Length: 196
Image (cartoon, rainbow, N blue to C red):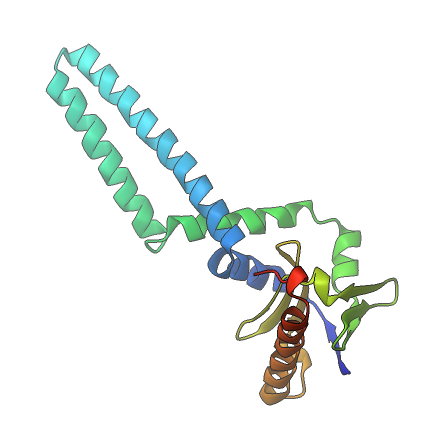
């Protein structure tokens, strides 16, 4: 049985947003969809502007040049402003925008100290106000980043364990490796419940 006590901080939401945008299929999909929508709006606006120029100047070429170069310049500038990755920018922004809906009560609950017990059969998360036990069948993925361990249920992390609450880097790595092994062992023994 593995055990760790940890406490999330509200700043961990930044790390969560970065992780979801960069490392998960869901985050990448959200970023692509938002970026496509933005591109469609941008191109539509430039086409309308080009049509207005064509109509006012009675010059098709001027309108086409305005529409084409306006769209290209706008996209180039936007890519530069988003470090050449607008999809990642929008996905991260979408996750961070959710923070404005977090109430002060939600923040207090998020920042409560929690204990995680991990066995070959389940993960149990407890705090002063709740107790949750997830059998491995509910865990879709365990992800380890440089500063957090994430446990996914239903495609979204429900557990975010910070490295800062481990006594050492080695303890963090060993804990992460062990729970990944528990998940892999469960999937190997229970092919009907495998997430792959």
